[in-house]
Length: 407
Image 1 (tube, rainbow, N blue to C red):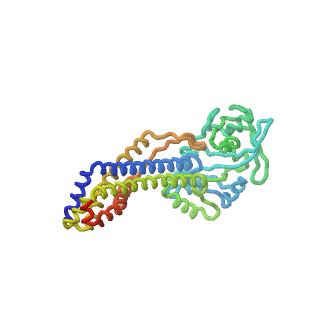
Image 2: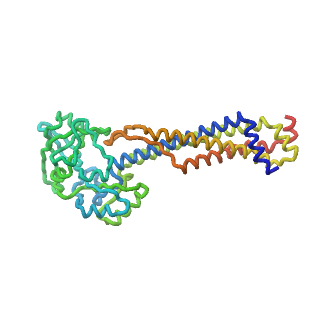
Image 3: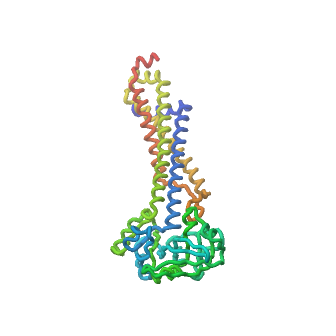
């Protein structure tokens, strides 16, 4: 009899087609939705990470020791030499793809009749694309800075520029001090007004070529930070540790996760919420399986009683119900995996344009589900169906044959 159980279970699945279809459809829906949620979770996380790593802070930053602890005061005194020798040493570290230098400083900006404080960003336009290949400064008026521009060009945040009533082509004056306290000022031509979803950047940030920033704050040949890109984020921590060993204790090395805790925590919260949604979908599927299998037991009481009466052991009745659940779970899981991957592929091909806060503009969300997760979802559907059917199957195997036949 044991050898005939799989065939009998398959026959029962086909014989009770409506019930099997309800259960299978529930599993297909649950698995496909779990894959879709997972695809959007991975796609959103990768998009946000990509926005930060390739469009903002880079994957890794190197500063003088103690810089991050004093970041609120923008400590230009904790600066670094900016030369090809040090850049090449960093590029030589495995998985480092590109290196650029920046200066972050503060000061006063004036249009001749008004002045206010600003945060300055001096960029090495020749190498900025190596560390942040997707960095794009959004300019609402005028034009962005180009490598070919001379050092006398500057960009102002849009609200800062509008409050000063200045337009591209007009002059503004930047004032700052060197690490030693020497005051300096530069007259620069406004090339454009930058726009950002961060109100602070619109109101306070000034962007200028690295050479102009070095001249203004008296840091010729020096920068306040190195920004690095890596060829594979899977080796991010390993690369950061190699840089720490190579550079020594005079320098501190931070990954983007340490530099952007808000984004890191936002991704974690997003993963948790979407993971909870996927878990709820799984519970709904398992509940549907339990209800359907219990219905099957109630409808087949006389059949179960007959099987027990002709000598079928209780363990074999249990196995038969579990095999039925496994078949439905496997078919439903495979169907849900196929449907889910088709939906994910459809969204990924066209992409979904999403506006993230920050300077890198519109981003494209492309959902993605790995083959390993797809296989895992099918296995969970199979094991979940068997686990959900266990209680109804035990109930069926414990029926009294005489009472079952009288039912």
